[in-house]
Amino acid sequence: MTMPAIRCAIYTRKSSDEGLDQNFNSLDAQAEACAAYIASQRHEGWKQLPTRYDDGGLSGGTLERPALQRLLSEVEAGRVNMVVVYKIDRLTRSLADFAKLVDQFDAADCSFVSVTQAFNTSSSMGRLTLNVLLSFAQFEREVTAERIRDKITASKKKGLWMGGIPPLGYDPHPDPTRRELVVNKPEAATVRQLFDLYVEHGCLNAITRAADQMGLRSKQHLFSTGRSQGGNRMSRGQIHRILTNPVYRGLIRHKEKTYPGSHSAIIDKDLWLEVQKRLQAASARRRGAKPGTAVEEAAPLKGKMFDETGDHLTPTHTNCRGKRLRYYVSNRLISGGPDPSGWRLPARDFEAAVTGIIATHLADHAKRHAVLASGDAINTATASGQVAALAERIEKDGILSAASLVRECRIASGKIRIDLDACAVNEAAKTPGADLDLSLLQIERPLHCRRRGVEMKIVAGQRRPSPDATLIRALRNAHHWADRIRTGTSLSVLARTESLSERYIARIIHLEGLSPKIQDSIVRGGQPVDLTLQTLLRTSLPLDWDTQERQFGIPT
Image 1 (tube, rainbow, N blue to C red):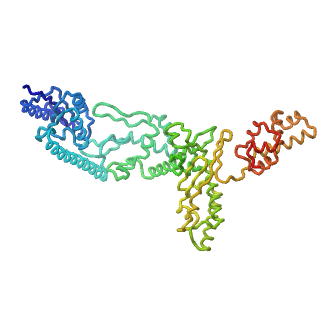
Image 2: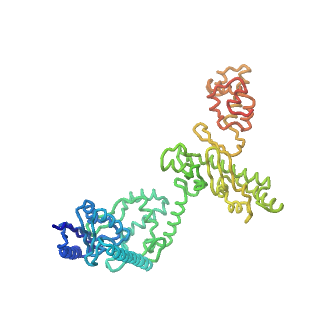
Image 3: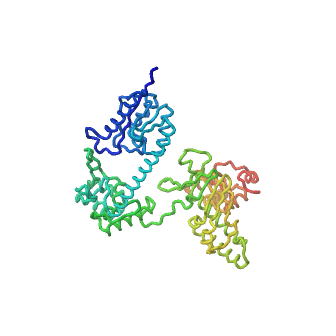
């Protein structure tokens, strides 16, 4: 009976590329040992495949190796029955990766053998031995990596340059055994020019344009392979990295810390500190704002707002005719596209609504002496007075005072819930350590958003009187012009006198026929939110006053 052939593929690997250019290198030695082992198993039907799978200069910490991937493809296709390696760590040093490989080999009915460790994966004992050896191989790899990291940290603490492409202004030391940088004088002059330009302009965009006009270019580096990199126009980001790189101050950076370097500084201490101070001040200023001007806080409620789905409301803005318009938008509208359930709230109006809700809520509890959870009359009265004073300050200062008290704000269709932070309220009201009433810290109010022309009008909580100057002016003109018409002035004469069209005046005079209750609500500022001049001019007014009041939602 003929024994079935076992097709054997040899895999070799070497972590570094040192010596691979020799006529007989480490990969050849591994392959020769594997071939000899296969020949010794010829009586078992082992047969060496002609293709070699060699990965030179590649780490065993990953499976992303060209030759290994080709080998796995052949195994998956059923063209390899046995994978032969010199040692197990030539295949992989990772226990997790090895488990994946064994699963792939088992699925393809393929075995694995290490010729110097005398076992294979076809037996349970071989698998156990393999797992133990692989665990030690992975441990060795991790310890080696830790040693390398510790060596780099220790070297940088001593101010040594640990390799890589040197920054503009420096070159590696001519002696390869010395881990130092030496100043490149022409490039150092370029670095000094960039620092001087920033002191002069104080704007990265202006420096970028000036550097381009002056012909300043990035560092050009020539690799040992002959490839050239750099020597191009410098971008805004490249210039910012140069201005913030502590190597020009004579320091070596390692993670978040810097240490005195063994190289010479290009920039003196005073110039370095001045540039860093101005860069930090510019980063804290909103882009587009002029230095020295007061800038409105971009989003005081950022990170505190959620909608009914639990989605964050993210601050955003747009510019319209030179005016910055801010919004709070459900995050899914930004990241996931249109969603009818998402919110888009005008930030200024919403912040004003939140301010009003909090101020009114605190004032109401202070008035009812419902501030402390428990306490005597004197303490309660004192705390109520301090909370009332806090409500007045919030009313005066606006959202910047109110936002610091908010722990979380949740909005849903028809309502808003605001949870206040007890510590923040105590600190702001100057009642340290007071045991505040739970009802003082939890606010729930109705919330309605109504379209008003192109704007979204927010009505939250108990609505305060809000006189509409445009409506009041139109109502006043309607009565004045109607009186002149009744005294005999013609519409054409009135139009010429007022420098307005006859059609416009006729439409405004029409408002004199509004119900007295509607006119009174307009003057007091208690009209419905959607009752605007544009609404009135578009609407055909019924003659019956009760019908008018029902049409515009005026309480009877």
